[in-house]
Image 1 (cartoon, rainbow, N blue to C red):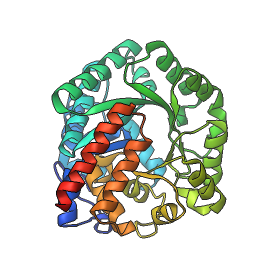
Image 2 (image 1 turned 120 degrees about the vertical axis):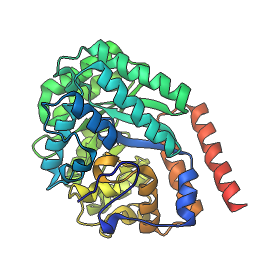
Image 3 (image 1 turned 90 degrees about the vertical axis):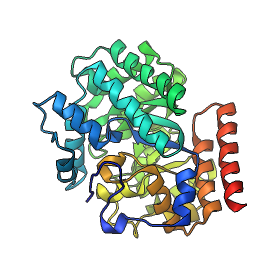
Length: 358
């Protein structure tokens, strides 16, 4: 389903997008990204380097072999492969390296702000102390802002397939460690067999502590999971929400309340959440008045990046440069960046569009 190459976006033919001038506009467009996973953003170079450090891992040590390794049969297989890559992060130094290099890749794409989904419980299972995990990501965050101009914030994410112990551990780390960059609390992993309401007590505590609620929902299950995320977890944004398009009442509710969807088109095809890009519900979401943001999810694993996802969205929605700039503004306005930071980034987007038009 995807082809994994260092330094290029290489995809299945259907997903490849060319755009000429629009591609140039997107490449220079200042952007925010709200749905992108920490480990899933590791480049082939970094994955191979980590695999070489830990030769007992099944992950290939040759970047060229990663193309086949990252071809997913279905969502369950994707989770299996993802967990194997998580297993490469065995020391705080590994975590710091990956985090900083992810920010470097973002800087190349003019990503100015990102809320990176981190799953710290998985690192703890490998014996890394909570304090060391937080120190590693925070050191990378500070360095990335100072040296690369990329502002990072964290979403601490429950790996749902590990159940309530994972929820308890993720919440504990969030509340006990309180990293300076932490802004939100999430829930990922398989949806089937793990109802959103099961995690309500943990989201209640996170929200009471001032964190925002941003669970995945409606990616591999129906719109009822999105409803559950809204009612039980008080979601302020929905991760994916692909199946929302199957429920007109839900679309109307999302439009009326302004709850944004974090849409990741290429990811949805790669994991089988939708059968093809041409069948993607993004146009139906926009037509219903739902606020959508465009994101890359696990970009190297899916043979994409954020710039390409903007071009995919532009093609699906028939957008010109001004329309693409509106998508970029959506992400900024739906973010948890402070008001001054939002104003600066929106001004950068406006200036880029004005320069392009001129």
